[in-house]
Image (tube, rainbow, N blue to C red; front, side):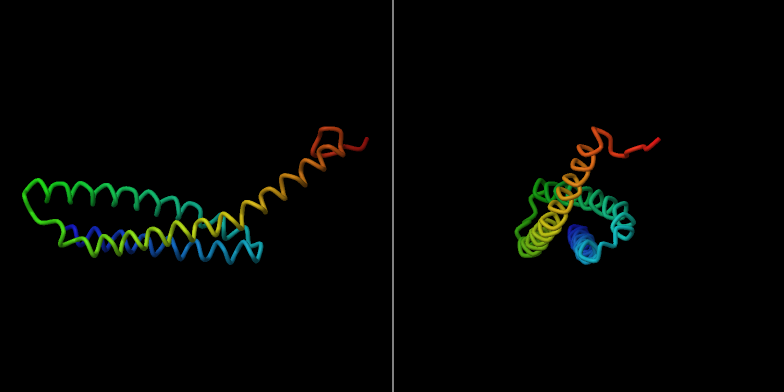
Length: 125
């Protein structure tokens, strides 16, 4: 069961990495629709990842309590940890692209609001 959970975790991690790579490409192309479409999918994948991680911890704890040698899973868990670190770094790369764009939009909106006397939209009568 532990092996299955580890494989599921790797699969979800890989799906998230692929989704983030698509996000990076879409940010570069300013393809916002695709970014928004993937958000719900990524949220579901992140929830699945958290749930599987919790399940793995419970399974390992149960095996340990039964006196089983859980070091047999060490290499697989180490590989999983490496994949999760790669996911984290890739997500950081996406953030480093998205956050400056967000800040730029914020500054543009603040400038427009300031120029319009505190209103984003200027109404001419």
